[in-house]
Image 1 (cartoon, rainbow, N blue to C red):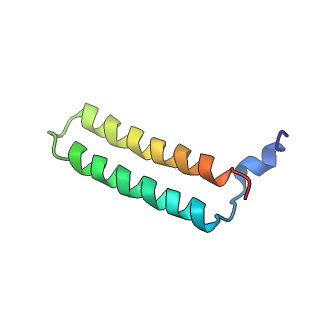
Image 2 (cartoon, rainbow, N blue to C red):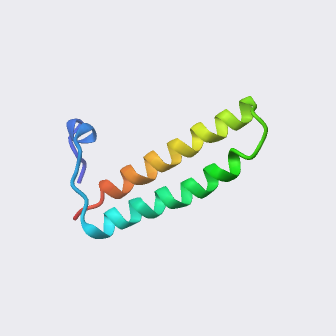
Amino acid sequence: MAMPPVANFESRPLNDEQLQRVKDNVKAATALFETITRTPHSRERSVAITKLEEVVMWANKAISREEN
């Protein structure tokens, strides 16, 4: 069932399992961030960090949109 567009902007409460998956995403992203930040400062490094932030954002949004 399609959600009305306004639902895309609303926050949703997470159940315990979803919250754990979000925490797991943060842990995995933090490990990758630490690897990325050991590279020399460059545009590519900055883009990699931005894309990592996007990955976590979209993954967590996908988790939050699951039916509880």
